[in-house]
Length: 314
Image 1 (cartoon, rainbow, N blue to C red):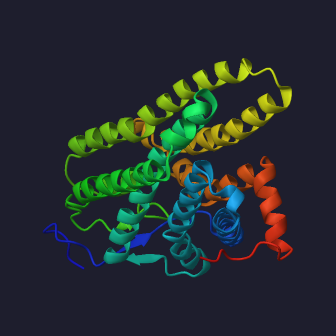
Image 2 (image 1 turned 90 degrees about the vertical axis):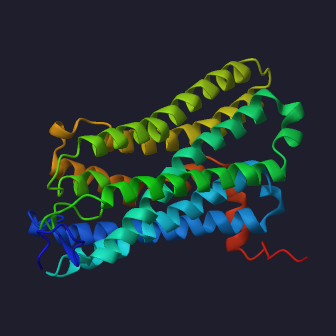
Image 3 (image 1 turned 180 degrees about the vertical axis):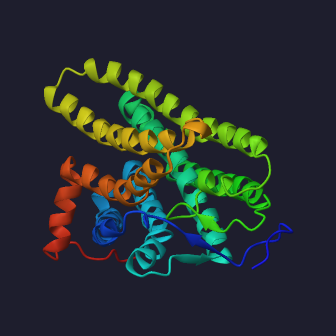
């Protein structure tokens, strides 16, 4: 394969965890376990949110969107990762790498915005309860969810395309287990300062501004909750909001570590394990956090398992 002229390669060799061959069998079981758990947990969330009329609220509408995002995001990465961990041929076609980059970047960016939208929903529910039904109408919820998906798609189209324009000059050994922007930038045979600047600006837009807005909204939420006289109502409000806040901290914490650290301090092996965590483990934690701390979802799951929750009839 001659790529010296900068033409697109026909494929990549994903080095992944090949430096730790004894660890690959363990990682295979690790990825398989969390992938199956992600599918089970998130499909359960989507099922009960659709089937149980009591969960037809903005909060569970956005939670269903989050679950769909997590299923699609993990599915875009896990099967290829399992294939490469299982056998000696650790490759991915150029087309497969492009699709993986576009899809995972779009879904990851969408989740960044959606978590901020969910914080807005909690703010309106706690701080403006009398106007909540009017403000968070089904139409508004659909518009906010659509804006989240479209913003992620726009970021992917711009950012991934900009990254894939870089000439590789024969470099086809990708020191990662997935096609991710920081790893792809290291393959370029030209100065990537502009790309790194774009990556930094995009990261500010999707990884800094949303969590800042979330923290501000939770500051108002905390103040409003402390004014509630009923201990039961206060506990319920704190329990619901703390679940979302846990998801926010886990998700943004790992992503920010990956994308906002200086390129010269980027430790490749460490980056792989961080990527493994936020691509395989975080989508599993979301349904666990929301179900284990939410009586409504646990009740709906019990009804679903006992056969008392039937499909809606129009």
